[in-house]
Length: 196
Image 1: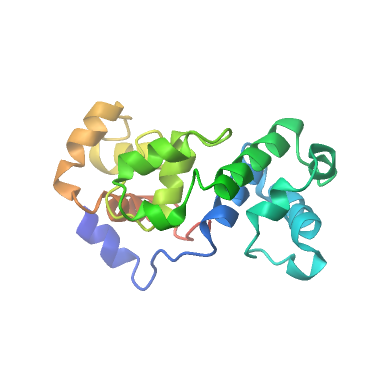
Image 2: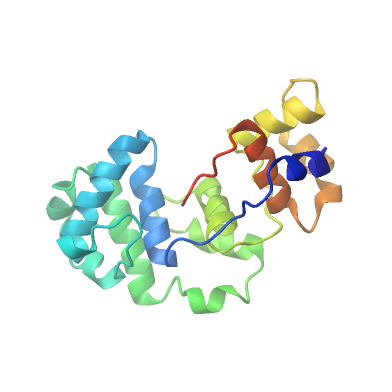
């Protein structure tokens, strides 16, 4: 099945778009809102914390600049109070060195997920997406992802969703490339890759 999916989607692959802080900040901004709304809020947020000159979709933001903004200033970008707090918490984790990307290479996937979910507003799913799309970790299996659940049901279980334990069992032969398998299963549902 995977060989067929890989052949059906040649010439596309994952690529990193920005630095770790900016990628995580963008993930927080985009949670539980439409892509269009997230894009508008993101551009205002970038203009507030980095200046209008850096309002591109994938700028490189300074955590210190985000931490220096008040919650009301961040709210003026269109962020909810909760998300403004999440972004400040993320920035403070980077500024303090609690989250230090230089140390991440030494961490296995689960240890990095554990470090990331310490930040308010980052749950397991967001951390796993970050590992796949930013860190380009090869062996992440995000069993809570609805797209992966749908693709596995479609291609491996006659349209019926599997429980997470059954998904993990099914994916054993894909190790150590479960991220790659996941990515091609997503492509089977939507051929246009999402950019994070």
